Amino acid sequence: MCMQQSRSCKCGRNMAYLSYRDNVLVPEILFNLYCPECSHQVEWDAGSMVKDCGWILEYDMPGARFCMTQRGLNGPITPEFLFEEGYLTWQGFSPLDHEVNSRLHERLAPLVKEDMQKYLQALKTEWLAHVAALKAAGWRKAQQA
Ligand SMILES: [Zn+2]
View 1 (cartoon, rainbow, N blue to C red):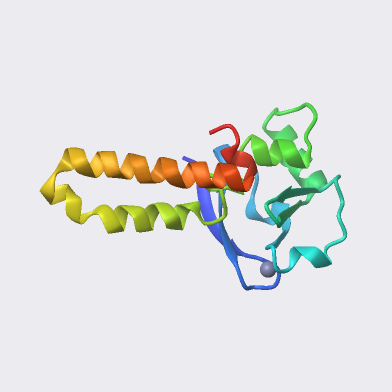
View 2: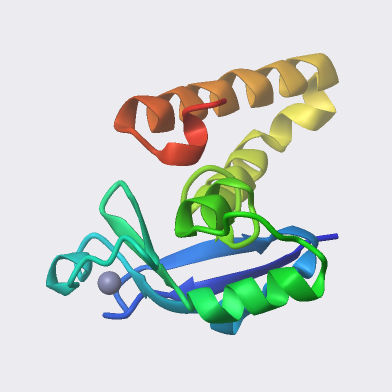
């Protein structure tokens, strides 16, 4: 199981659900999280940051490299690598995917008693539409979906 956790951005106006692949990294490795409303004040540093649709994740790279090496994971460890490979990234494709998914299940729940097949089909159709919208909006993790 991968640990999951939510976190507020620097300005506190938004939050994101995060996922930690194989629990290699700990929450402290995400030095700062900036939402589109607070990311513009950030001085960009490609050596420690990843940008995704206005959000910026700032990693403690020495800390991340230490954790990875402890687990025998070597190689070019970059912010993009941590994000794309899932070591410290969105849960799902975007910061609020977890919530979107829960709300979708909740909304379609009445269908379960009515028609299971219809429920599963609706779930699939609506989720795929959501992912397509994220992809069109340019979310990094949705690009390979
Ligand atoms: Zn913010």
